[in-house]
Length: 409
View 1: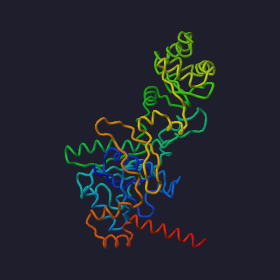
View 2: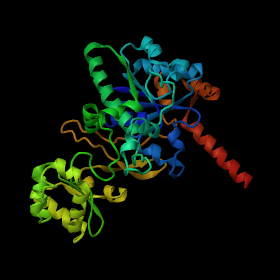
View 3: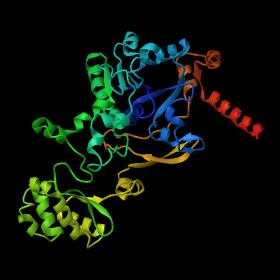
């Protein structure tokens, strides 16, 4: 699969990274003025953004000025040979640039064209710019996150940016199968403000049945109890008794409180959820007698779901993730050796692979242009006109800037 990636920041690049990990040939098209905006996001190592590094592996980079006719012509040539185009401009921008689906479909009728935006290509909000944080507020997610009565709280990560990337990836694969069967391409319209709504399964069940509006539940589950963070002598742990069987195992084999099973407040999950404050107090009174590891070991022995609450450093250093190849180290030409998150799906026959680190800005411009039939004189003219930027041109500019800084000092 040949993918032309005209996206930047997170949602689009995450999508194309997933496709690249699985073997797609991804050509990243960056603007000549600085490239993908995430290149300007720190922290930096030797001047290179580690944010960009994390979600742009296995890709090539060409820097084009899509506002110039020459740059646009190069994009058309690449689009003619591509299977997929991914873009995350605000609706209307691609049309003004002449690289929208209708324009490219004339060049390549079999093209799968995926647009990722804040609110989609249609509807009353389609003209608005989209951001993960705004989508978290609009969809109701922030009203359900955090503690009841407190200030609305966002998720710890950009769930809708990543979710949009994942949604785009599986949608592209479905459209690609259709293209393989019929030879027909299509336009995919992905909106940050929509991709998370289908995740609210329990909330939708309660609202559409009874009109119940979900509230923030803090560290507790909305339906099951106990299914939450609980306090121990040394900190906190996660405890999950999602059904009656595991609840009874917890009472007898872990907490050694068989009387809880017949307690009228705790007989069923519905009752336990209704009396969750009392339940939590009773459980923590027992758990405060020993440290977290003691209780996790007892839970595991009894077959009761439980686990630690790690910070990020503890999570990525967990030996299980290491054994599963979830932390990989690659060599970058500027950064040097740097670790990144690995590929989560384990294929028995066609495993994904981290083949290359993220590309330098404009690293492949010359090679791509040569493949398209441009000679050295053509490339020099394109560079001088500002239609393209090459890595050599970028390096020269950096050297001149450094020289200017030294002269100034």
